[in-house]
Length: 391
Image (cartoon, helix red, strand yellow):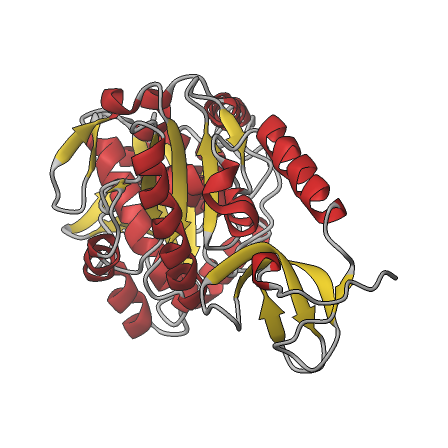
């Protein structure tokens, strides 16, 4: 998305209204007609620079509408004023008809002057006006995409409060604060039964960030299901996974969840986006592991599962150290090279995340005797009475 580099500006809302009046603008436009400039008095004003021809603008505008409606419903004194980048009045009117806020009457020359005055060179751009000038120093579009209506009143103090809250949730200790929100204290099972978040207390939780449209996610899901089912039968129900969907629509989410044996954050719930932000998820699939104490123990669970499978439970650093020490001991006890009667070439001891034994046809993990020439793998237990040359 093209977004502006909005630096903090000491922009007074009164100054803006004075500028309009000085240019002969006597009223602002609403969906119902004309309103006097005085209707903005005493409110937090945000200038929204946008255009009907701009795809990122049309994508962001519904998010801004939702924020605006939410804040108005909460009784906040907020007004947004649309200033157009459109080339003609038809484009302006087409864009404005989907907006519940106000607009400066269309005038290409005056709108250009306003863009220059507020140093706007990219859209969409949202600039808050405040009498104290203590504004956010970063992109307000990004702040709203991250936090929605909670970003209000768009000050540095509010931004810092939100980031501190994210840090607190990421460090963990309170599962309810992480997975639940006001009005929802549950997650969903694959049949859409409601499981209260409190029922997950004391368990090791995997937050699985993935989507059905993503081929790597579908491949990892199959691997994760295998691990999940194994742990469900061996850990006395002390492990659970919660899907944090990044699917594109509810239909994809339904399809995704139906293929999984675990739980999910409801698709319509903003907590999905919040968790992606809190754990700084940059790509999928991703797996964040939360310990039974409610604190984050690993943010790279995907690699841990891929390397060690169910052996990695309970996914602590000490457990990984134990696995690696055990594997080293096992490897030290095996020859580096073997010559097996079932294969014409010499086989080298190797480590593999997963493979299929070409002798017994069963899956294998970790140590294998492999042939670099013909992609042949052999379980150490499948080696038959042969010479064991050393390096």
